[in-house]
Image (cartoon, rainbow, N blue to C red; front, side, top):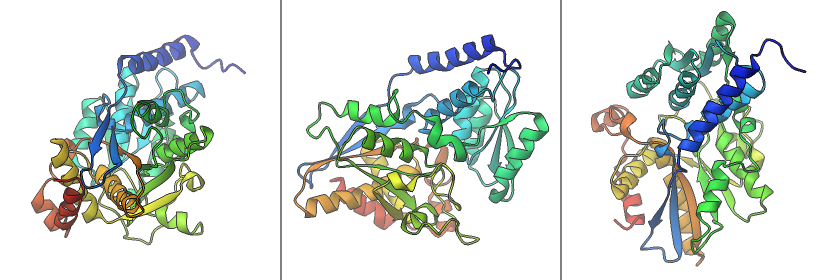
Length: 355
């Protein structure tokens, strides 16, 4: 039934603007990383940092806006709200400004300053909370107060993206591998923040009947890998939190779909930072901490394939660039103040990469 409150002309133009933005953007690169010590095994990085807003979350933000628009939840003049540690809000601020909408990001007060600056750069407003556990309730309150819409990435991420295809990240990966030696990868490795990306990739693999396994790399201090092993575990103990932004959660989110995942690898924060630094040195540019988490899981899979005498390809995600983490992950003094010793992992991944 048509909702008379929705200006269908404005809605059509809003969808057109988002689709036009997509058409202006080339697909993200798939970077090949040869491994000289592991004959027959190749690592690929899907470089999501090349999106207009610099991260994998650009895909999610686009999907969430289209989903909300086509459900009639966003109209002309709607105030849009999100609970986010940074990157999702950066991307959502970009799309909100494109549509001429007010955007408020509810963020933990500890969010890195460069991410807050990026949200503001795209026209977003910051609503910081001291207790990260209150971001959901505060987002709901602001939506009620403003008569706006809470995008709620942690609920809608797994359903907002068309997992059957339509240029999603999984379809893009397989298309880009088409002319490689191993066009069907042994493994695709990703992290889980909302769970939307792992749900999309896992469903696509099954829908296309590929033999590829889906491995999710998860911070040690995250509930997801614990829930994967034991479905009765739905939250972390108080005070248990990861330093790696964008992935891992203290509670199981509605968008996390464990049944499409084949394996989960818990990764210590120090190992994530060391791997991040090693792959950054190999690429000649900085990447973010969650990419380091992914690389650590890839290392375990590469070593297992090699020990079994197997060959094949492994694909993982370069989630975002490292420039937003100059005052944290790339600051030795900050890491030492947090008790994070990354050096052993940096050396290990450097050797694996052949450096």
